[in-house]
Image (tube, rainbow over all chains, first blue to last red; front, side):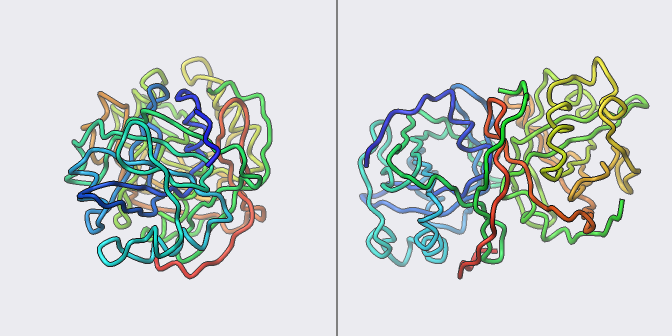
Length: 178
Length: 178
């Protein structure tokens, strides 16, 4: 993976538009990955992300126990792998091996980076107050990477019932928002 | 506005892909509206939405005091109005009058529906535990409306620095996810 450090203060621009993300964990000598699109930015810098991780999945246990994960943003061309990851549980199979997902060591967390993704965000759990009621973890991004070599930078946006929206054209405005 | 009731159990499909939303409030005999894209689904049904409302804005006071708001999803063609709403504060002007935004009474909350939007979600604050630290409100959608007469159903997705992504094509997969 051609990974280039990405400024933490610009992470919001990757997540605000609502892409599907892959969430990887490392627990008990084993990596796992799940698909996720219930997330939101909470703060610009250091970037805080709120993220729902279902307590029915294998990743919940890992995230709760280790307090670490990686959020990776897959490009549209990874749709098939994303769907396969979503359709299976890490309880039953090694999703990386089963679906040909390649990993790479992160620098600040034990969860792996995922190759082929547009960006990888190394995260640590910062607040668990809403975990019991909503499975909602507050994550702090402690390191961010981008892979500038991926030509097609379209992202996937989940619509439910097997449908995904692909990101379309970018337009400029005179918005003053950050 | 041709408003058609929209099933609460399907609201997630409107918000998961990450559209910019307009958040309207009604406080002290006055309506206000802000632009927002830091939100996430928290539960399918009844639909719970987590939503960051900056405490520097006028809407924060209204939302905190009344516990009610409407989240409206503007179509791409409303870009100019959206940008104008984001660039100004309700402290200084009546944004509805200034930018030609038309409203309509909601049924379960005092905040107004916004005409011309793809969907309007009537919301009540359900949890304020993370308001102090992250300005993060948990909202329950108590009524949802869709306007089926809007032909171009593309949504706006904020990228920062004046840039917006327009939703692109929809593709189908064999995902088992809801």
